[in-house]
Image (cartoon, rainbow, N blue to C red; front, side, top):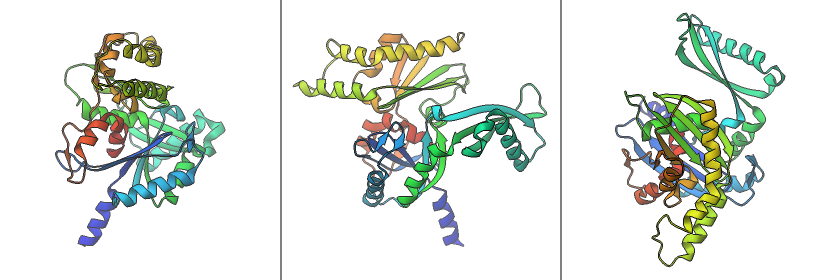
Amino acid sequence: MFLRWLKNQTEKKIVALDISSDMVKLLEINSTTTPFIVENFATASIPANAITKDKIANPAAIITVLKELWKNFGIKTKNIALAIPRSSVIIKNISVDSRLNSSEMESRAWIEASRHFPEMIGEIYLDFAILGPSPLDPAQLDLILVACRKDQINPYIDLLQQSGLHAKVIDVNCYALERALSIIMPPLTTPETIALLNLNNNLSSLIVRQNNNLIYTQDQSYDGKRLLTQTQKYISALENPEFTLAEPYSVILKESLTSHLRHTMHFFYSSRTNVNIQKIIIAGDCATVPHLAEFIRQEIHIETIIANPFTDMVFAPTVDQAQLVQLAPTLTLACGLTLS
């Protein structure tokens, strides 16, 4: 009985895997304890052009990287949580009779999906979650439907299978980021509006939480690689790596970020005219750029901090704590995935 229990417990564990255009990040957290324990994390570069425009162009190269990571770090867990961009999915809210059982709800979800996007019903994966009683009718339950084309997910499932891994959870980046936000900024009883801006090499994701509810999500293309490259060139050219947010460094940030930042905020405020963001949390690959929070605060006049979801966690002896803290904002998405 003990061996069977241990086997079941192991199968329930998941490793978060964040695969981008140039890097793989993995993170394993034990969330059954208080505080949470970071059990493993690792990053590895993948060959150029192995992934182009979210399409896997060279699966063999990525498979090699994944196998080496699992071997080198001695990771036992084979169950994986992945995230797909919000822009790759269709999300709809519906209401159903609260007396329906789970099978009936699933049937209703497919019926509603057929009604909303009939032309692609045979080509999608569909999932749903119960949001709670409908505020308009207590006899109804509000559901959220999430659909994605199979051809956008299947290549990643095949990639994991060929690496000896199993896709346990396919999440949407905005929901994973929301869970990470709940760790970085735990829900409060006082009304507040907080945004999390995840800036990666080629994608910018903004989520906004108001009064502990997710009210806004958006993905946009963003050339974060340019910002990182220019920043690194500037730092490398300095004899003293310690520098301040002044000319010409601020010019680099303005050229690489200001236009995108203002467009992102304008897009949000044009759709949420009565909402004011009190705080912005910056995450993702670009969050490691020096003085980024200070620069954004000066540009849009909103309190800005860099994400660190591991502040209240402890670390397994094998974890390089200093490196993890340094890379903390880049692992924000992976942190949310581990809590799937």
